[in-house]
Image (cartoon, rainbow, N blue to C red):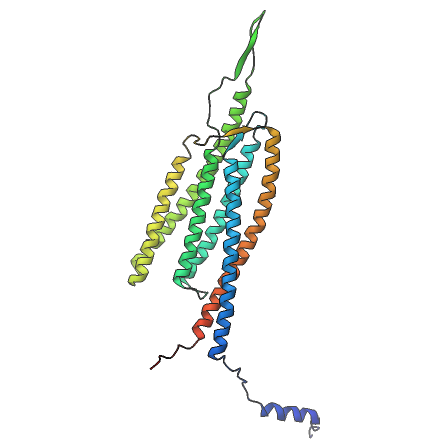
Length: 313
């Protein structure tokens, strides 16, 4: 049986299709176009870099204010443990930022080993150094807050308040009770800090063993030097963490003044508002950071596509 003829519009479509090239090629950008794209991307990278610096500066300024305010005050018998709880909450928040910075640092370390983005080794190392500095600053701020907790004092559990027909009368010593509360908070905070320091030491120790293994396996002198430098930094950090662990046992070194309950409550309200602002700033900061990495990588990719300039005769 013969097939019915194709409709005329399908015949025309088939003829047109066969007449077209099989693989339509988009023309490659010329040097002038690439230069224009490079200029646009460079501008975008510069804007993001400035945004990061400004946002980071605001975060550091606000954190400095919070930590400096808290380490200069302590609880009164009236406020009981209000200030201690604020210090504890702030320490926990600072520890979370350390963990987040460490995740970003680890991602850059992985980029050094297995590049995914087109970034230079120097750019990655500079960003790692910035995260290192932030981690160390946060660790010191946590230590400062802990050191600002009141030192243990010896008080009698009861104090004499007068005499009568039946001899000396006693009542519960409020200073003793307040000291018990502060000592309990101080011990709890110290235990939490020591736990984090132990975890950091264990992680750094594993990192050191890995670096030693990598040094022994490589024959590339440039890579060997980079790994050796990283091992030196890691061993220095282990020593510093151990020193910080010992330092948690030392008594308070900060002069503080006690605050009444009303002052502590007002400060707590202001701190909560600042922390809420800081969370938004951190979200903004790392949004800029992620965009910056991608834009910087795209810039270098475009730069690599630019044909080398011909030498003048």
